[in-house]
Image (cartoon, rainbow over all chains, first blue to last red; front, top):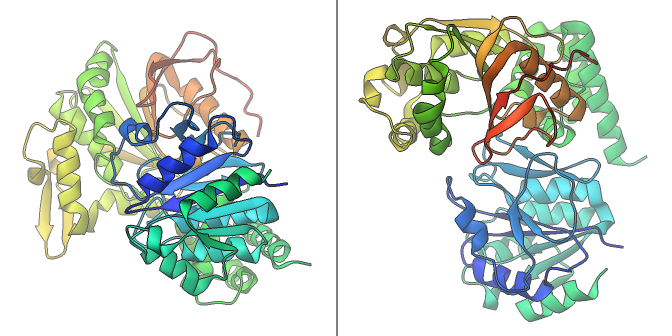
Length: 185
Length: 281
């Protein structure tokens, strides 16, 4: 019944994201879209960070590309990633939101509008509040909201901001998050 | 009826007003970004809903122009994506020299940063004297702003770093005058640039070109409009001419009118296949 998993993180989020993609494996049935705050100019080396045997492969999203399972698509450096009607990716170079581009809020809000209840939104470790409004938008439209527990975050500003704004469905450790995502279809 | 449905209708009405009253058609634009921009207008004008903007937009041309500017302006910087411009300097511009005439068309001038980036490259590669440079935008306001060539200085350090990373060969600062918090381009250092109104939604190719630069414009277009724009590029480019798109944009595989020159940097070349003739819009 779920159609898409969106993930957002910044500082300290690479490790839990690696664990997640390694555990979901390449045959995970749901598409995954992610925003990480990364410096402009970050290239192919960034997605390679997440590569490991059997893990869900990663790529940068391409404009108007169909959203499909079998890989996790990241926002390219210095572009916002949005979800377009018809379940496709879209990119923009509009002004930074919350001082960042890509912004987690932009992805989550647009995904919530297209997927509604069929969306799972996940925030990991992060050093800013970007992502909190996005989680609120997902929650409002009936999607599932999951935040990584603060004691497992290298930087917990993101989780703190989310918990302040949203009554999330789950605020748990990475192992439980993996179990949750493996359990949904 | 849900709030979402209402917002959709309000957006539709506003776009209809812009089209029927002022001739700007945004219907073919990609939805998600367009809606985000319209919502920012609601905040900017401190109104409750998009519908509140409708009567003002219909009757007040200046407000309408502000909305059009807001919806249509692409954000850019000097030498955004330095590896792309490094490639243009090293490979594309030298390749252009083999054409007897060189018309360079930069589409979507924004506030001019990318336009002048191209002009700087042409100068430093010694092509300024034989290349004609045209920049277009749908928006006369933006063309005037770009022509003025004046920007807040806050990003200047980043622009200089981009220029150097892209292989810049002289002192970037020599192209600018600093006054207070602003920098302005010293147009006398560059070749003349023609600023022309042109709309990819309604207008066709208007001159034969050898190099088209259109970066981060197509991402704002829906499928049909993207296809139309590529048709315009194909009819404008001389066979063997080059097209440079934004790093996240692409041409569908298998379009016989185009061959890929450099896939990561989105450099394409017009083949000898006939251009699509149907304007289909």
